[in-house]
Amino acid sequence: MSGQVDDRSFKYPPFFSFPPFFTIQPVKATRTKQLEQWRALILSYHSHYRLRSLAVRDCPLFENPSIDRSLTSEDILVILNDLVSNGRGEWEEDKFGGRTRCKILWRTPEEIADDLYDWAAEIGGHVGGGVCTVYELHSGEDVVGTALEGVDESLLRRAIAVLEERGKCRLFQGDTSDEDGVKFF
Image 1 (tube, helix red, strand yellow):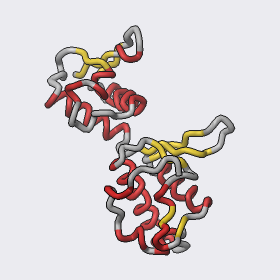
Image 2: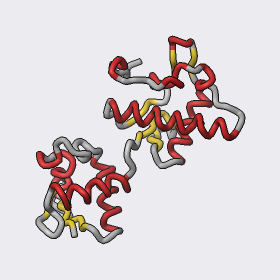
Image 3: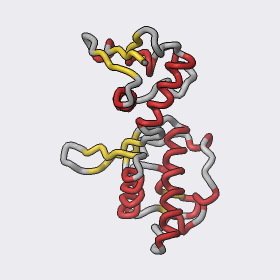
């Protein structure tokens, strides 16, 4: 698997060693709980390693060699479609329209918007103040160690749009996308 990371630092939950976890359950209530657990596992794993997408055919979560279990292709699609329908994933279609990658949203644009406004009000001191660039909001020294550090720029821009809809900020176009500025209200 080319996309593997060192799994030794990630603590798998106990249900990862439960063989039925690797077969989508037919009883609706059980399946609902199982899909919740899959969502939590995928989000936890990708957040832990700060991975932004999942390769459908190359994800170590979909197999557990120690119990000789793996998901079928169909079950993987059920799990990822559930992740997408719950707002925690987005399909990234390949050039042929196939669904081979899924963008993982550890945090939704709405959650990032809340973090961004909290940062601007409390830490950044930007509410009612000056303008900061979009670049500064994901890679600037003021966001180091915060929930905004390293956030995907496309998600950050969607979060800014959420704040604009709420009337809490305004995006100003710069000469380049790195120079786009945000003023918080």
